[in-house]
Image 1: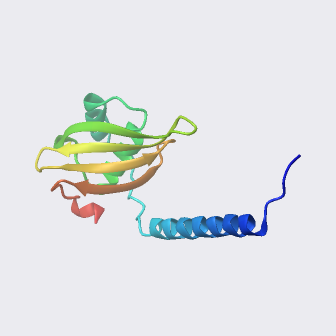
Image 2: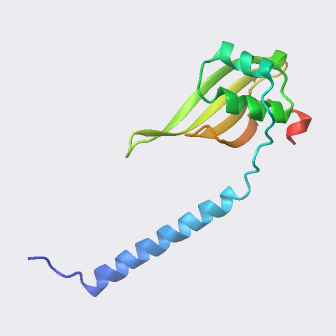
Image 3: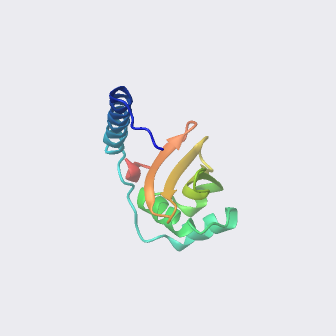
Length: 134
């Protein structure tokens, strides 16, 4: 026989849901500040440089972001992909492509979703985005 929740339990559950909704609203509001990266038809030389450094299904999308941001093929020193999983559903939810450039420290990071759609581009570890990306 199922027991009915008490008024206190219902109030507690409503409070948790309201708090969760508030946190979600704050997180989503913060996402509005992430500018969509500029994309362009991928430069074949940029795509080729990515493929030589690291084979990945998202290379064409990352190449379109790099091309739109003004990164040239000779600048690409290295590429490493990091992936993020939804541990509950055990599936990939996004990739970060860390692109090392020959003329500077750090990396340019291009984030794409699980379907390789661009999310953002930013610089880490002393790297600078080309002027076209600003």
